[in-house]
Length: 103
Image (tube, rainbow, N blue to C red; front, top):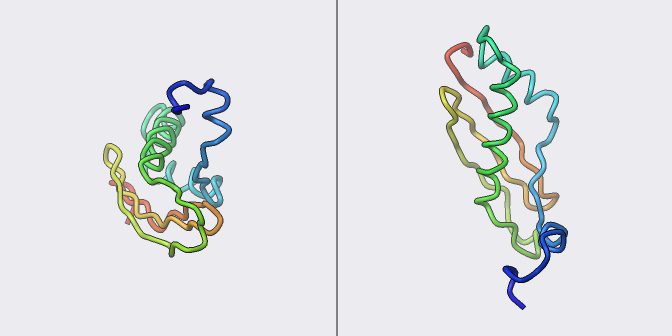
């Protein structure tokens, strides 16, 4: 049976997701990168949602341990992100966040 015919809950249970390491630190860095913008919290939420979609473009292959960590970059509005995918524990490490309010 193809995945198109599986119930949604079953599809979600089979899907492996990338997890951000130290989400609180990433949120603090994002708030700094977005600067004094009104609705900064809304921008942070939008960024995290878009970044989650970006991560979905990176398939997780089995076995995970056979792949080494890989570095990538991605942009959202005026924020540039360098990140590392770590397949052994299916996590993402943010290496840098740069924006107009960061140095």
